[in-house]
Length: 357
Image (cartoon, rainbow, N blue to C red; front, top):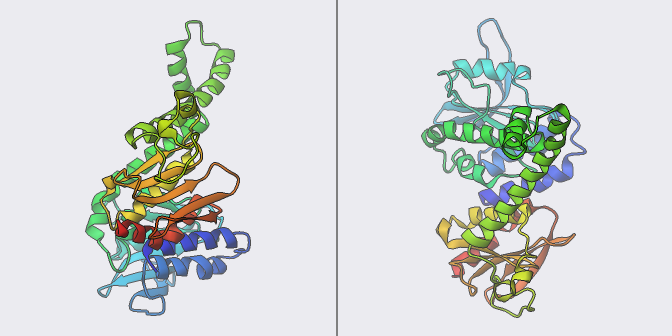
């Protein structure tokens, strides 16, 4: 099974199993081992590749065990410590992982609860595991930008040097993204004061600050939504219909009057779907060749910005989401999906469509 397919399939299983995984062992069996075997590609039944209950005696600490050690060329390269699904990932509760990383050959340590996967190295101090991960993966909300680095840890494409070279930037980009997200959810006082001082001339009292905190939160959300729409409607080539087939005047957004164009709203789910499709087909076509065109009824994804080269359609403007896939005759098949991440399950078909062009 291809990397993206395995990841998408496991993501679906986590969503299905989450309510029933009540123990650490259940999480290991249902999620952690399949991740190591199917996503990363290691043989979990071969102790020369994956060592369960890896003994890690350190100093006076004897008999401590790491859940799994991944071995390459006879050396431990990756350590994996697993917790029960839903349990917070806290290094304070993973002392053996931190201690053994210090004395082992491993350069990558993984702490997971099945849904969340945190990948660590030693950027801050050599041989000492960092306090913050350089890569985070949420199987219920897969970030397409994390996949190229995750792929470098797979058995077939293992490239430790490349992972370590990119780790520092990944770590801080991830941290900044989380800080920005926190700012949008709950704007800090100093940020609110900064913006208020630029738009409000009166004294900034407690009442004014409270009023503007809500205004800032709402403004930030609208700003992001506007930028997303601008991004896909201009940088991603406008509003034309995704495929040169029959369409109603309303759907033909490229030919529609301004009043209809203004009704087209590109959602974050459509942006995520576009990024996932592009991440999938980039194995066969150049990244820049994949573009999106949004319409009122669907978001189309094309190769070469060409109506005659449809890769798929995202029908997300309804309660039931559909992924529109095309056969060799460009006949669309609408497949119901529950979450945007389900697109990964159709990676092979998307790649095959790209190859046909």
